Image 1 (spheres, helix red, strand yellow):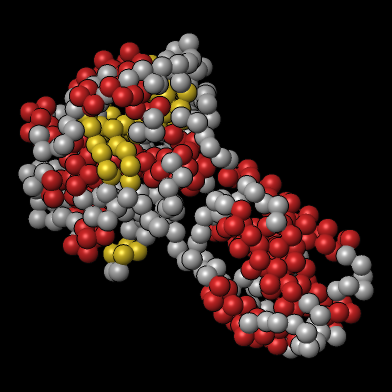
Image 2 (tube, chains in turn cyan, purple; image 1 turned 135 degrees about the vertical axis):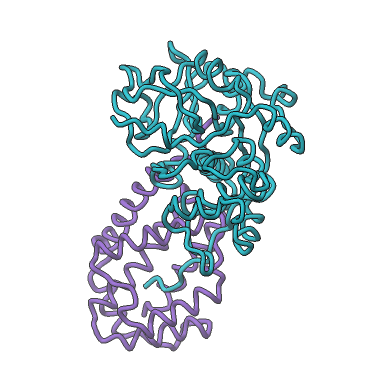
Length: 300
Length: 156
C-alpha cells in the first residue's frame, strides 16, 4: 500500500485549540459525562452499520488535498444524521453524504479567520463550524455544485481570501450539529459512541496499512491527520474503536464486525494515549436534518 | 443503543409480500370478477368524489383490457397489503415497493397519461403527497383506504 501521509492536514497547536474552544457551551465532555458514564461498558455499537442501513452504504471518501479535518468531520455528521433517523426515529430523510468543501472552508476562513495559508486546519475549527453554522449534503445549491468531491474547490474556498459562498452558508445554518464536545479518554469515547455520538480524532499518530487478524492496525509512523471513530466494541477481548480514514481503500487485511473498507480498529489504550490525549478530538451529535420531501403522486 | 427496526430487510420482505399479495389476488379472485365487471362498469349506484369520478372516467378510456385488469389488481393488491403491513413506518416507504411490483409485471408508469393525471389529482386531494408516519391504526386505515377507494372507483 502506498504512503498517503502527505494528505494529512491537521495542525497540532494545543494553544490555538484552547483558544478556539473557549466559545463553545460545552467545550469539554468531562463536565457533562455524568448521565451516560459507563453506559458503553461491555457494549458493541457500530455507527457505520446505521449509516449503511440509512444511506445504503458507508461513503468511502478519498481526499486529494490536506483537508482531512473536513473529511473526518463529514463522517461524524453522516453518523449524527443516521443516528437521528434510524435510532431516534426523527422525521427526516437521508439526502446524500455530507459535503466536505464547505466544512473545510468554514473551518479555515469562517472560524479560523483565514490565518493559515497552506493546507490544513484544527479539529476544533471544523467542530465549531458544524455546530455554529452547519453542514450540507452533497448536491447542487443554485449555481454551486457540490455533487462530487473536489479537492481544488476545497483548497480555493479554504484560502484566506476565500470562504463559504453566502448562499451555502445560509443553507448550512439550517442544518447544524447540535452539540460538539471535546473527548479526552477512551472511556468517554466509548460511552459517547455507545450513545450514538461520532468522535473525530486528530493527532500525529500513523497506523499500519495492514490490519491484523482481528481487524486492528498497529500504530506506526506519523500522520498529521484527522479521522473519525464510527464504532466501539467494548465487549471484545481487545476493547477498541473503529476508525474511518478518508484515503479510499488504502489498507488491507482481515475485518471484523462488518467494518467498512478503509477502516481499522484501534486498541482502547492506544487511541487514548496516542490520539485522544492530544486534545483535539470532538464528539458530534444531533443534526438539524431535512424534512421528507413530498411523495410522487404519479404512481400508476 | 438498541436498533429499533431493520428497514432494509423489512423492505425486501414487504416487497416480496406485496408481489405475493398481487399475485394472490390474481390467483384467488374468480376469473369473472375482474374482466367482466370492469367491462360493464356503471355509474348508477356508485357514490364517488369528483376526483374519483375522473379516475373512473379516464380508466374506462383505456382500451387495453389487460392494462385495466392489472391496474385494478395493483390498487386492490395495495389496499390488501396495506391492511396487514404493520411494519410500514411511513407512507414514503410504500412507493418504492409499489414501483418494484409494477416493474415485476412489466408495467411502466405514465403509460396512460390522462389516467395517471387523474390518479395524481386524487392523491393530492386526499393528502397522499405529504409524507406521514404510520404510527396508529387510524393512520394505516387512512393510507389503505386511499388505495381501496381507487380500486373501488374502477370496479364495476
